[in-house]
Image 1 (tube, rainbow, N blue to C red):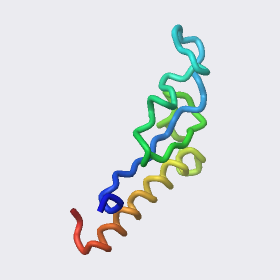
Image 2: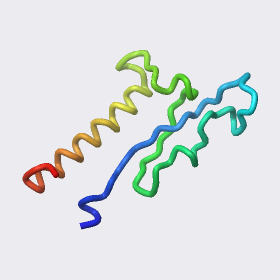
Image 3: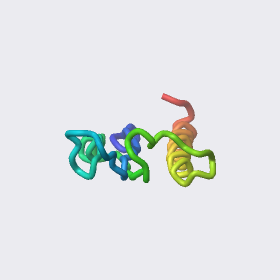
Image 4: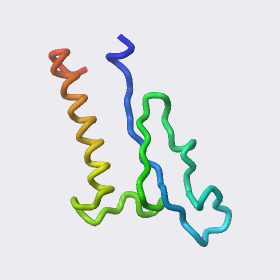
Length: 90
């Protein structure tokens, strides 16, 4: 039962820091890895961008776009399979 209803998420963490902003520590990252984690069922991955650019992609050929799109598709597939196994969505 707990496995069936388990919440699962993916968080992406900035891997490049921002320079020139007073008060930033930890490689110039705006959000630390610990602060961006959601819990034990959270998949964590780093984006090779800074905090301001981590949601800006050059297009579908951007490797970071591909990484995020892959995780979104993985979650969609997982949810669809769960729906099919139960016969109806909850």
